[in-house]
Image (cartoon, rainbow, N blue to C red; front, side, top):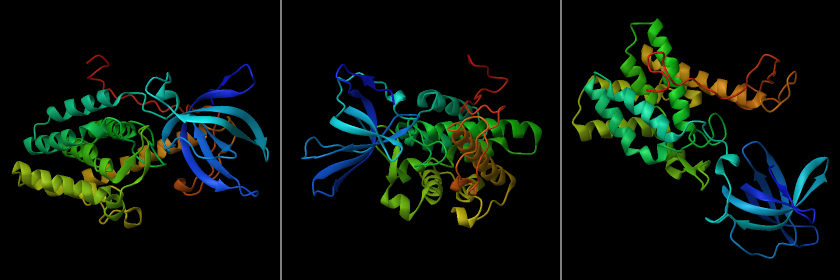
Length: 328
């Protein structure tokens, strides 16, 4: 944690409030049980003898002051003062929450430029219209609640990562319909802007009621169906896109009501899983020293992962094709 030490020995700084619950101590006094976080770590915290005060919202930025102590061999922060951050406070949100290294505006622009070059007018109209309907949230939305790309701007970062992988595959397998494949990739997780709820800091804090009842695969297919009717598009592309979205989790146990049934759908499903796996492995191994193993990761078949000495665990992706260059 990037705390500043005060002259009286206390520490203070701005943190993300990940958890805040009122509890009762053994002496029947009330205390706040909290988890404080920045982009790199989380820290257990307690505010003892709590008697009420300012409303504290989880997933919001707060300013804390107190002492770092040891409890059962682990660091714990004893909070003396805490308040919500105000508009006049000086802090950098990028220091407190994990975020894409490329802005949502730049990622959206990259994707939009590609779609505008499509020769298939039905795909172009469908994709551009759905993108622009959801643009405001797409610019900052995470891709998940806890797993891969659970960061500010993670949804477009994940999407553009798969787009770049698809570019290379289409250069090898020339029979693939690249515009159909890219359309499915760009739209496959768009409905997460409806499925997930975010806090003030831009991270996911839970699922909407409708999101839990229906899910982003079905809602994403509904987006395509509704948009096609609105635009008066009656063609095979509509059913192909709906199928790609519904099948992109691959198998029923991962939420897909149907398995991929043509090559572009199969590639989308495979690349989606591959990009998520790469991110999760890099994220987990970056938190342990070289030569060490992680704890078991339940999302990766409960495996331990090894951080070898040749590894580069940074989440860096080259989003530019050879033809584009970085100054296009």
